Each structure stands twice: as C-alpha cells, then as structure tokens.
Image (cartoon, rainbow, N blue to C red; front, side, top):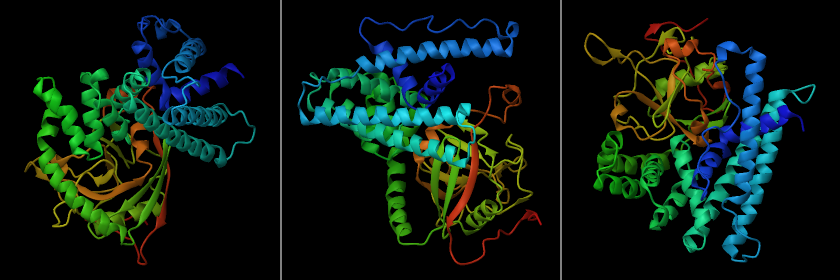
Length: 442
C-alpha cells in the first residue's frame, strides 16, 4: 500500500475510534511510560514550505500508526486457550471490529486520496456505511469485554485496563453514547477505579439519563471533595431532571403512536435521523421542514461545537451571525414545551439587551443539538425534535468556535458540515412558516 494509504488508514481510525484509546493504553501499559518525543519533530511552521510541513506531518502520523498497531495487538488480548464462552465471544467481537475497521479505513482512503478514478456519491455513502458498521462492532466488542471483565475482574484485569482507558479517552472526547453497561462493569469492581473513571462513568450515566450511574460516579467524587464545580451543579440537578425525564418518557411513548415528521441529516461525520415534535412546536417544525425542502441546510457548517454542551449549525455566514432572511416566533413558553436531553434539537433565541429577557421573535434557521440534559435552557429555547438514530455522530464533530474571529482566521479551523438534509416523512399538509420579521425568499 502507498504511504498516503497508510496515512489515511491512520487518520480515519485515530480520529474516530482507536487513536485516543491507543495513546492512553500506552500510558497504562506496565513499564511503558508515555514518550515525550513520539513522532517526527515539528519545527517552526514559518520556516517550512507547505510540502515540507505535510511531509513532516505524514512522517509523524506514520510512526504513530506503527505504535498504535503494536499496542492494539498486545493490550487487552485474551489467549485462544481460554475457552470461557465469554472469552470466546469477546475474541470474536474483536476480530469483527478489526475487519470492520479495515473496511472503513479502505473506504476512507479511497475517498480522501481518490484511489479510484471516477468517484461518485456512492464512495461517500460507502464511507458512511462503513463508519456506522465500525461503531456498532466496537460497541458490541466493548460490551462483551465488559461482561468478561465483570465475570472475573482479577483474571481479566488487562481487559478492564483497556476498558478504563477507553472510557477516559471517550469521556474527554464526548463520545460516551452506549457506555452505560461497560461503565457499570468498571464501577462494579474497585480494582481499576480512579477519579477519571468516576468522572466519566458519571457522564456516561448522565447523558443517557441513567441517573443512578451518574450519582454513583459523581457522588463518590463529591464525597471526596474532588467533583468539579460544573459537575457539582449537574449532580445537584439530578432529582429535578429525573422528574422531567419521567415525563419525557411518557411523551416519547405518545410520540411512537403519532405520525411525527422525520428528517435525515447527512454530515461529514455520519448520518442522523431526527424526529420532529410537530404537535409541541408546530411553527418551528414547519420552518425546519420548509428550509430542508428548499435545500437551505445543504453544505452548512457546524460552526460551534462545545464538548459536553452543544453543536450549532444553520448559519448562512458560518459565524453565528447569519440567518435565512426572516425570524419566527419562539415556542419555548408553550404549556407543552419539550425539555433538553442528549440529542434534542432546539432553536436558540436571542437575549434582548434592553430588557435582559429572551426575545420571543428571534428564532430562525439556526439550531443546535444538545449534548446533555440542560435544564437551564428549558423554557428559554425551543426544543422541536430529537435525534432518533445516529446519535453517536454528535461525539465525532470537530470542536470549533467560528463565532470567534481569531479562530475563523486559523486555516486549521475547518468545521464539519451538513452535506444534505432530506425529509423522510411528513404529514399531509403544507409546511410553510409565518415570518415575524422579514419574509420568505421568493
């Protein structure tokens, strides 16, 4: 394979799954402290040509890939001689994950470096499909590893070490979807618990509304006086959020019996299908579907991504200051307004600087995905939908803040993008918003 192919394999795997885990696993490997000089040296960029800078970068990535593969081959392995059914299932899942990752890496390289002469949209579709498959195989592998570790923590400590470092890496990157089972397995044995495990196990529970797990992790840190201030606030809010979540579960059951509209959102990091709460925010849903059907969201950057908080998009200018030429009324204060949980879609409303209150007529094309239950936003911004599938995509978005002028000038600040949005299902009536300020485009 070409060097470019190797780099593509590394870049895709590092960015999505194995890199953070591999680097942290290296730190956890006995008698193997992290290297302070791994990779090629990177001298001042001002003295290098673009070609030289790229060569340096590729050399560093190549070395990292070699190190990653060596670590993966020796860490968390269970010998073939172990015929425990849980061990057999774990090894099978590991093999399935490796194959899925190889397929994903191949499709990434072909897309990134144009290894096929006539690339079509099918190339990206294959990339997205392989990305999804890799994620599903990884979750199964992780859960089977958790079951194996929980069955005999002392015997399978190396698997537990792997899970611990994966949890910490994914926690730092806000990629904790479907971590509840494995996090509980880690907390079930005191052998490998440390402050970071407690912190991110708490996050894994909090974002999926498993408040017992969240309290187990954060509660121990709070008792030791080690829980950060932000997490202290969230821990204190759990009783109130639990009640809101109980109500939301009832609403979700009601939604299942409705013909709520659905929209597919294809991004540079994955595909999401969103369900829209038309009965609870009819004007917001009408506006969203109208804009989707008119192609407004195609190629729109995800210009603001803050870990453990939100990802925002829909700006015409890409800096948070643009709109679609009109505003709509907010529906945040309706009696049946929905609350913020992970994957909620919401329209941000501006603060009136003269009254210091929410401007109810400031909604528009911009919307955000909430990363966590955020009760401070309930009754202030309009929740009009939720991610029904593909929620793991949120954790893959590049962290950027293009509302900051200096960051916009940085050539490395390339945001992820909504490639296209398509209405999958809607009710049998026109979807046309009623502008409060401005007018609909002709």
